[in-house]
Image 1 (spheres, rainbow, N blue to C red):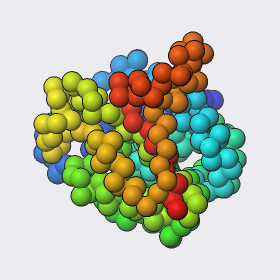
Image 2 (cartoon, rainbow, N blue to C red):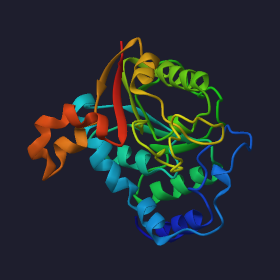
Image 3 (cartoon, rainbow, N blue to C red):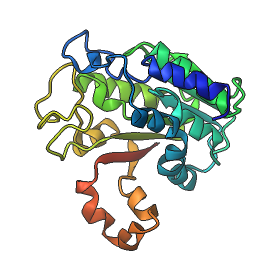
Length: 260
């Protein structure tokens, strides 16, 4: 990320642009109130490095399976790491839109995009309130991505509505990519609550089961990409043949749904 945008981006992160995750909790619980004005250097470096991280973990397998995607929507884009990676990728999009319920995150995402020399006319960011309909016509996008958002939506009914809305704005034959933590772990991925995925509490993240996710995409052809990183890892790909067996132990669920 080039200057002066890098410095401005860091300022926004230090002010809490990446601190809010749950937007529909109505103040219940304390998960979203933990930001105390301090940002660790480790957290800051991770935010800065998200474009490179997503270029490998997300964009590479999508290019292989989706090919060219002229119009892309990144739902819950946060500070724009995924959105910028998609815009810079071989998907060769003409239009990439990132949306988020945090105005502060949207501001940081726009600065990040400028720091990567992206034309605002091609890569743009919009604030959309949590739970609001997506402000796009039916079938507008070729690819819709959603990374680490679903687990922060409070109810299963709201999650179904959220995915239905993403599918609405995806064209027939287009794809929805979804990444969310696996519930098959002792501690919830984000909050570290013991059995937090099973002791569901409003105001705290929790993960949907694989079966529940599949039901949300009933009218789609669904492919699991959970083991893709293992297959692509320079050392671990030697045991890639065991990926299906190991999928239950992986921390993330990653699916690609084709809208039929």
